[in-house]
Amino acid sequence: MFRIAVCDDNVPITSEVEHLLTDISRKDNISLTADIFFDGLSLYHSIESGLVYDLIYLDIEMEKLDGIQTAHLIRRHRLPSLLIYISAYDNYYRQLFEVEPFRFLSKPIDSNLFYQYFKAAQIRLNKQKLFYTFNFNQITTKVTVSDIIFIESEKRNIIIHTLQRQYRFIGKLNDVESFFTSDGLNFLRIHQSYIINPYYVSSICLSEVTMSNNRTLHISAKYQEQTHDKYLHFIEEL
Image 1 (cartoon, one colour):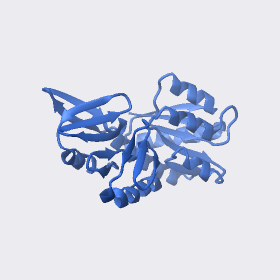
Image 2 (cartoon, one colour):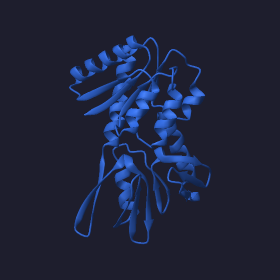
Image 3 (cartoon, rainbow, N blue to C red):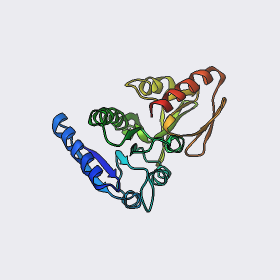
């Protein structure tokens, strides 16, 4: 089940998006639900109340709270929601980069492009719903991959840092890395002791990266070139 939000102050546009989503659901046998909002403030209040949306279609120019301001508030919650902007204006690219949009749709909506972007979002969301499973003290634990900020090796221990807490078990980072570099996951090995989720990078320079939990990690010389190349590729794919 995908939970989707559609936020636009133009009623015909919200109706069109809802209709396109219904067609995709019926055609591809995809279970989804769509909540409709006519301003950014209502959407944000819904998120504050505890609802988490997998995918958000968001207009830019709206009263009360525009689409860019709304996205900044959503990103403060560190939610892995994908944002697809729908707008008649294409002069916001610099501002949009700051809130990591997944795609941009121009008005009027191209139904074929809408379908392509939805399918791309579906692939990304399916990856985000993956779990990493490990055993420790005869207890099996599942961690949602999209919640992982970074993974750390400390002597014989593996420490998984997530949005909510830390998990610790005995293992080797090389074995952990083999999972996170399979199935198209975007995690990056930056050091013999660290694997990071690029989604949670707050800032990056040649030899350091600061994550969303304010931990600054060293990028060793061995991994600097590939880290920056892969991170730039990740940004381009957003």
